[in-house]
Image 1 (cartoon, rainbow, N blue to C red):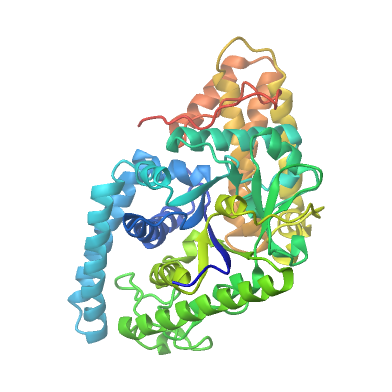
Image 2 (image 1 turned 180 degrees about the vertical axis):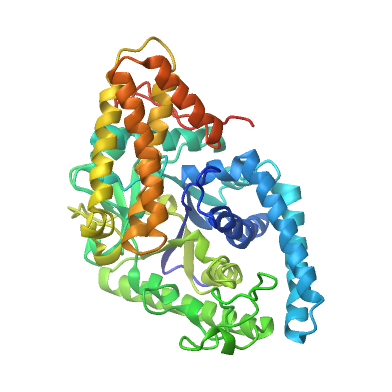
Length: 513
């Protein structure tokens, strides 16, 4: 093993849109279960096996509080167990088909589904928190937190922004016994001055996209006149894996994400070529894909090493490379991703690269001077257009109305202790403000569904607000109770300190259904 020439930080962000049993997107739960089986099970299995060898600081992992709630919820756990069983039945169906390629695929899918069922039943049957907590305690990874329902923070009023952030951090602390010191800000959204809110909430580091630092990502940087530190994604390295135009997952040998055998719901094809229609794609070959995984992992290690060598030569000291991705890339979208990830994490130290976390990079002194960050995100244009552009003007205005209603209601007289009406209203408001709805509209991905979901939650906020204004608290309580009866997966938000944003506030409360 060579002496380290610099530090590599892999940052993964786990997030899926919040799902509810009422009015759910028809493929919503299927989406969750596919990501759970394809990414969360195998990625954490990689972390656990490497940790068992005594390795620490393997990666930095963000888990959006809404997703953490889903992965702990009894309803979702039952649904996931059923889905895994259905996967195995589909594999058996494929194994009985007369086509050799599909019968071979069915046998392989049987082995995978059986392993996933065994993993789920032995380690995940009580949720994700019991899986994450021992790995976190052992120092296998660093945890990042975030706001409760993944809002685009620059568009929030300061009181609402603070409420959402503290609620998310508190919920994470309740689940995992650790209150995160760092966050992956939803969509890497930043507005000048947000660092002061972070400092007040106990957050001392966060992630931005590389262009926000004009590509100068070799060191963490303090933001403005604060002690809060930002880390920038190194896009030259990150895009080697996944970019808007290219990257490893699109290679012809890898399993094609979009091509299904509609009899079994399985994916039998390899990419073959970007312009090849689905009915002409070649059968997936696991051995061929495994060879390409090794080639691409070795190429990535080379790219990281060369990048760190060039940065060390330019700055005269060891530097930092941060590569950041959605967790769902590894396994769900890119079937071979977990195998690639394991080989990279094993190979980097042998190439003279220190693998660490964002916190570990700070401990190693990889800190540069202060920087003034511009308004930014990691979306199209690296600005706010995805969440605040012409295509989503209606959603932006809806978000303003929701926040006005929530803040006015928070000033209503209340007694000591929790207030179920205001708690329920706060919950609906933060769900209406999720960044996912604007993203789906801007990207023309289930736009009608996204607008309907945002409007669904917003209309409840405005209905409750009007009842409070009319003094009809009993009627407002009935509305909240009805919502809770249909939509109880994630408990309630504690609204007591919404109007006093410097105070401690609570997060999701598990309902124990």
